[in-house]
Length: 172
Image 1 (cartoon, helix red, strand yellow):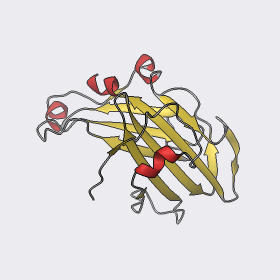
Image 2: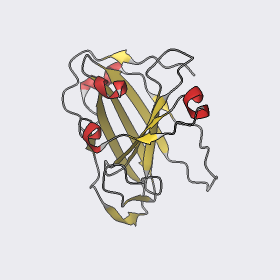
Image 3: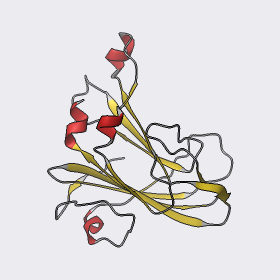
Image 4: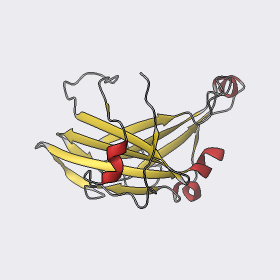
């Protein structure tokens, strides 16, 4: 699949968790259609949009879900057991350098972020590393649900997360 990340028509500003922001009208919508994990039959509807400006790469997810939960609350806590979304991006267009970043965010806005080594670096023994608290603090995050969602919500629920990644993070 090809997806063109478009330049925002105006400065990105502060992220919000509200989808009515005119800023996002300029971004094509992606729909998640592959669910690679063990099939439990639960397949939330997930939509994503990505934009950029001179300062940031902006990512927005909107999710129509059920069985919503968020207990991870600290930077780089494991969020995979929570209701979460993932964004993988390889900022370097050079196919010889296939390193990438894995942004994983739960519905309460807690992020887990890995800088994943290139194939050549992994073969040389270098490993994936967690991005530091200091670098993570530069990412602006907004979320529509409370930080902690416990007990689990079992009724149909919509939630959103939006985050703005400073370009300098990709230089790390």
